[in-house]
Image: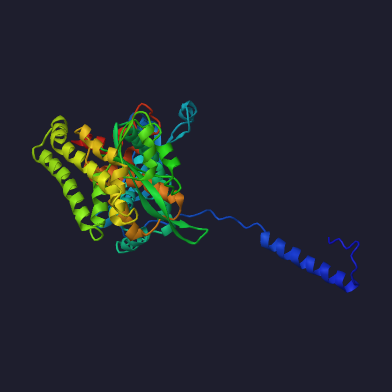
Length: 461
């Protein structure tokens, strides 16, 4: 009822307002009237795809077959992929009921006995995507750099129509499934005593600005055992991210000259190392500006790399490599370091050659430390190689939809990056892991590290 008290209205105005309110209430009741909810029906998988039946029987059938009556079986279909075709795994779970009332009463649980559905057949609960189909989608995107929409078009040629929202859900669910393994990988890498760290950009959709913005993905590589992980923290490259990510690390940390890493010069237990490849690049970029100085610097850096080639050609041990560096590389670095000091004040600070000299001058103590241990690399190139897949991905699928999608991408990139570093077959590894990772859900005596590509390689070798 409308309250007209204290309002100066004509009689016809009151009548019109009450009539309008009545019509609005009638419409509102009709609009919000509860509808009969329909039970969602899952679309059946394409009939034209070949089907392979697998029969599963309850354990009780072996010992009590005479006391059981078979009922209509439970049927689950999942789609699998092999190069060039999709097929359906038709899982038939046989179901039985105890024949007599006495047997039913003595049975501890239900009188209906059904063969369980092993998690290996359905990595994502209540999904029709089999492990091989999920592996194909993830590998095509994060190794072969094919965006999901292109893969969906390719699947149509095989007679399969995959709804884009469904594929996106599978991506998120697969990342969630692999996330515990990803966390275990991070623990293992950060527990080593020599890592290489780098960052790269990844385009993220900013819903507020309605455009893509550059976020940063961090990469940490264990230099000695071919394991790598990517880390995404809301796209930030700030010092606080490094502090949180690397707070417990102790050992040698090889990076470029990004100013955030300067703080590790003062952290107990951390030995910062530089990257001569980054230094060389700076002088290559300054050749047009000051050829004489740039060529001199490149010549000296080239001599350092010649020492590394000699060590590689002779297959020297770490101890022998360190000795060769001490007698051949270190004297070159001493002279080059003094050259930097002499030239630093002679060049324009903002010129390309000035920036190159300043870059080396500021971190020369880090650049020269690699000679201390034969295990240390002269540069961060192994880390940069790990970033190339992400760089190629940027050119093909263009962006991540949001911060959550970027975090999920970091999970997939990390584990497939380990496959690449360890030279493990991407597809074989991912199918195996998606089929077996649920085995680790309840048995806490099992170590997820067994599933990492490097350990998987050792297991099958």
